[in-house]
Length: 300
Figure 1 (cartoon, rainbow, N blue to C red):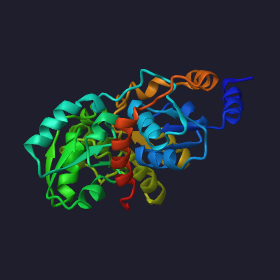
Figure 2 (cartoon, rainbow, N blue to C red):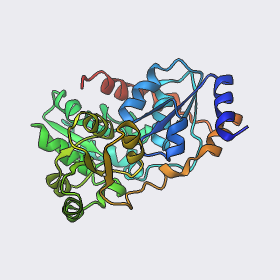
Figure 3 (cartoon, helix red, strand yellow):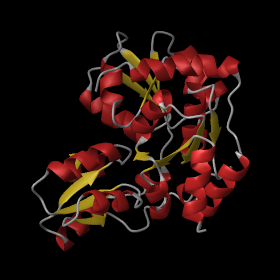
Figure 4 (cartoon, one colour):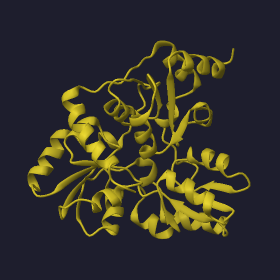
C-alpha cells in the first residue's frame, strides 16, 4: 500500500481528522480533510466529531485545537514545527506590559502560545482582528505579538493600539519594491497581500486579506492573474480552487520552513503511534479557552 492509502486506512481506524494549514506542502494539503487559515481551523477543531485530530501546522495551532477539544487527542506530526513569532513574547513580558497599561484590553493574535492566550482578554486572527478589536468597550488595546497586524488593525479602528514588537519573518521581509517589480512583470494581475506585511507593502497592494480572504477574492474576481503576498504554500490551494487563473508569488523565497517540516510519512507515523500528542495544562487551557471562545463569538 502507498503512504496515502495507509494514512486513509489508519484515519478511519482511529476516527481521526486531518487538518492542514494553507501553508503546508501540496501533498499534505491534498490528504487533509480540511485546509484553511487559523480561524477556519480553530472553528473546525471546536466542532469536529472526531476522536483524534492530526494537525498539520505549527505548535500554536495544535495547542489551540487541544484547548478547544480537551476530550480529543491532538497530534502534531512534526514536534519541531514551531512559530518563531509566537515565541517573541513571554508571559512575564506581557504581564509587565499590562501593568503599564492597566486600563487597556489585551488582544493576542492566535499566532501565540497558550500561556499568552491565557494572559489575554480575547484572541484574534488576521481574518477577524479588526472586528475583534472594534467589539471591545476599552479605548486602549494592547496587541501582541505582531506589530504589522497591530498597525493594520490600528488603521481600521478608532482604538489606541499598543503594539508588541514581534513579527512574522516571512511577511515582514516582503517589500514595497517587490510589489512594484511584480506589477511591472504582471501588469494585469491584482495584488493581494497579508495583513502581517509591513504597512508600506499594504499601501502598494490592491487588497489585504487573510489567506481565507484571498481564496474568496480569487474565486469572485473577474481578474485572471494574481500576485500573492503571503507564504508560497497558499499558491497550491489557489490554483487548485481556481483552474484557468494564474497565481504568482510576490517573492519565491516567502517560505515558512517550520510549515514545511510536515510530510506524508510524518503524518503516517503520527497515525500509527498517535504521537507526539499536544496537551495543555488545564490551569492554562481554561483561561486560554475563554479568550479563544470570546473570539469565536465575534461575528465576521
